[in-house]
Image 1 (cartoon, helix red, strand yellow):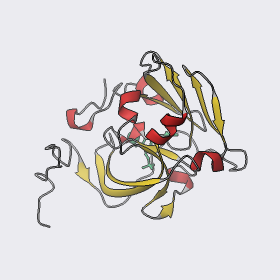
Image 2: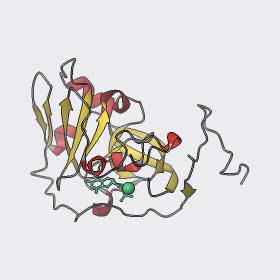
Image 3: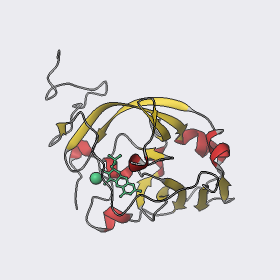
Length: 197
Ligand SMILES: Nc1nc2c(c(=O)[nH]1)N[C@H]1C(S)=C(S)[C@@H](COP(=O)(O)O)O[C@H]1N2
Ligand SMILES: [Mo]
């Protein structure tokens, strides 16, 4: 290896490996509860809350919004990181362009099949590397990793990357989601070690 993982820098000047993290080559499966049963024919992606118009997409409609790929690193709050994950799916920005979000809808509650929720400020979702992924390193997501669709928010701890994602609720203020209610940090920046609060 040319560069030690302890000193490698990203283009933005931040350490590639955030403090307190170690690299893993495998891919642990972590979630609360059991894997939800999902039927793609009945699958819907719903948008509600502070929007001019509530929307519902079928699987085909959602994927027709646009497709892109992005390579990013995973940082889990339990201290493992996994580099160079190639995700493919629908960019958040492309979805956002299809929505009519009210100006006060600046916070998002992400909802998953099975009942999991996590909160992310809208401005964080509007980054170019945020997407709804159906494919990881060229393979369709496995059920354990969020099939058919998971959110990927590379600059926050991985609990914000909701598996089995099924909808977004736009809110005027930041409210805690599932893990945030149980003491995880409301925001979750790995470079500031915002693990628990
Ligand atoms: N729907 C749902 N998404 C979830 C979770 C969960 O419990 N339910 N756990 C989060 C946590 S804490 C982590 S670390 C990652 C783990 O994703 P992985 O199993 O693909 O590694 O999923 C996140 N997304
Ligand atoms: Mo986690």
